[in-house]
Image (cartoon, helix red, strand yellow):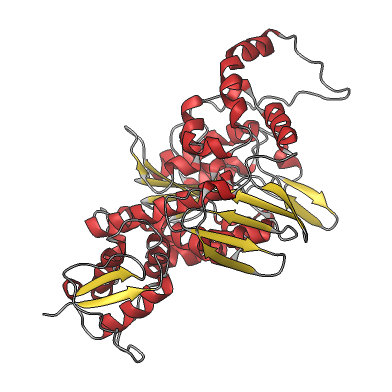
Length: 478
């Protein structure tokens, strides 16, 4: 069989791959007969002459949105086999729409690994790009140098347009460059490191700011190097301070401990510590609900309309824990009935289960808010409030005996695990616990509502659905 060679416009030509792949799938072309290449790069020596892909509107199949969003991210990876991998996966997804739910499948796992690496690289670009000012006839222009691991420049540049819309700037990378003149975003060829300035007049101000916010008592060198790898240091103005600040951290922390306690502000009264609940045998959920209604272990009850207890089947195998009731939940006395609840319902349905198959509750049972005119604005519960409500959550779990607890957001994860949990480090994996339910950590759906960019919002929603899909096997287990 003569191989069909598809030439894409560039290494990040996701649209070109998608159009070609749909045509080839519709024509029944097996992955073994296709050679993917990029214009301007060396071709496969054994490939036949280029044959244009099948034209015309492909008919007869549809693809789940989850695959498209996974592919649009994963195809930006630098792995030279990515185009072939996602085409093989596409052919299999067309034949089996539930394939992406099989996290153990090698090709599904590999595709997710590629997408995860791309997301991480995009995050690093947004975190570690540092602009330096240069003078031009048109006025100030800000230039930054960055070395991404993957083909992410065009996908990430819109973030900087939103963040620095009033600036004229350029981001130079070895492969591709982005330029914003205040009105139009354009892309050009790659550049050399020497094309970007090494410093500007504002760097001393930035270093002063960085030194002032550095907290030696919270220093974790391994975590810092993981989040800010040393390969980025040479492009960061604060890099020259990192080693001296690390070296002085121990002495500064000791001085902070030795310093006398400061006096509280006038009129401040320490919050009464929550009363510890006496040991209690698991009871029925209705009995527990009645006790929660009478809870006075923290001050939140005084301003809330009512306590909001969990709801769902008493024999549910999966327990979903959110942060706290919102405005609508506080009024109706039911969990997850507001906008975040509606988004959770939609994500759960796409993940393969209905809301009424799981038990939903919150880490904190009363609404914490700040009055603002006619509105009540959500305020994140503090450690004291989480601790005050944790016995109720533990008794819910003891009564329900779920096989899996889905902790949505940092507050829920802290309440379930009994410690601070970093969502980015634990998200999307099943945490095993001896003698206790397994835990799946993910974001809270209210986070998705706050994402301003529609493209990123779609990607984050798809990732949230992927997280929830990990819970479906627990629902079906006996």
